[in-house]
Image 1 (tube, one colour):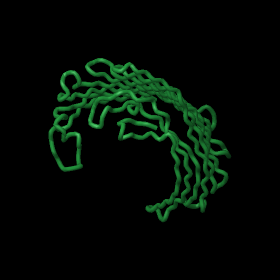
Image 2 (cartoon, helix red, strand yellow):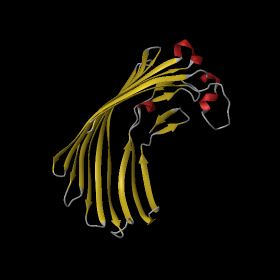
Image 3 (cartoon, helix red, strand yellow):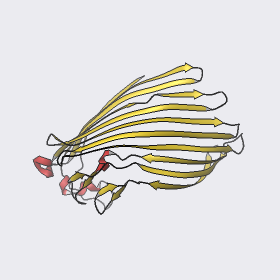
Image 4 (cartoon, helix red, strand yellow):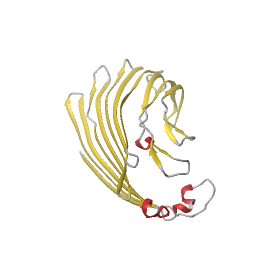
Length: 277
């Protein structure tokens, strides 16, 4: 199958308009945003395949490419800094196998590859660049032990190679890092003739920083930025238990309790105007 899309947009706030307090677009109440506007276009193209390899075994794969060009105009900044452009290019490949077993539920084995390129320019000259390459194999399994008990487990391991360049300062940085996510749990259906069930699971997850979080501001009210660092991935581990059911065809209910612990949390340091772990 094929899918392709293209979109173009142009928008701007009303500028020096003071409206109700704490409502609407607060940025639009500042005189410096008078006549500010954004112009951009986005395109995405996808090629995919779904094929039955054998009885119960499916192969699926998508290849996609997308790009975004966006230019901002802020006349109050003057001719030198009143225009900035941003480019994003991303391609992804996501092959996977899905197997429906006769007695062992469903298995999914896959691999994700994603490459991203980001560039920003001021006065037509490149000021920042960042590249990301992510690879992630994963496996997921669900097993129906009987009509009432279901076991599920999965694991995903992601490797990231990140690089960034700040042209004004000449700084360059590279980092190769990895993180894993996993989940294991069991659910018990109280009565096989209805949807009431109890579950408990333990899991871990992660989040890699986006490239904008690599840069910091020189002051709270300043638009001047500088390269800070490539941040480590944020990691979370937790346990979750719950009960869900149905009172009638229109009313469902659910209760759950969980505990989570995070490490290397990506947060904003308001004293130093930067993101940090």
